[in-house]
Every structure is written in C-alpha cells, then in structure tokens.
Length: 90
Image (cartoon, rainbow, N blue to C red; front, side):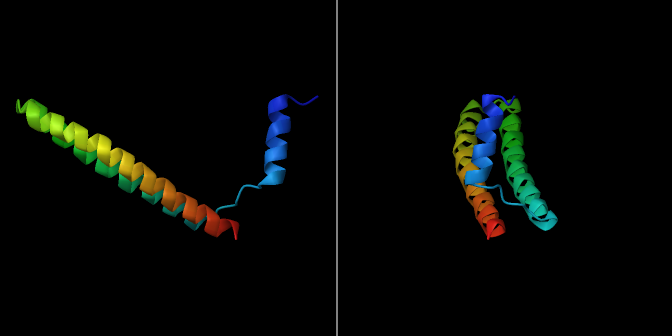
C-alpha cells in the first residue's frame, strides 16, 4: 500500500514530468551556482575586513549590500536555471 506522499508524487510526475538534463546542462547549472557563491563569499570577506578594521559603518553598509545582492543574485540564478530547464524539456 502506498503512502499519500507516494501517490501525490506519482500524480505530479504524470501531470508534469521532470525534464531530463544532460551532463552539459548539469555542469552549466553547477557553474552558475559557483559563480553566485563566489560573489557572496567576496562580499562576506569585505564585511569581515571592515569589521576587523573597526569600521562599523562600512561593515553595516556592506551587510546591507550583501542582503540586496543575495536577493538579486538568487532571483537571477533561478531565472537562468528555469530557462535551462525549459530548454531541456523541449
């Protein structure tokens, strides 16, 4: 006997089958992830340097920039991933 979760997953896969990604597409997705992760790490390093130097104002400004950048980059990343998934589904 199947659980409700298993039944729901079966119905979902019948209604909208998952797109199969090629190895190259998976590699592109991984490269996108690493590119955005590198940017976040760079901003975090800048924040740490400013905090270590005792520049609280600059650290706070960079922290706010990090929050803004993270939102923007996450939206961009998801958009690019979705484009790749749609292209793979065709």
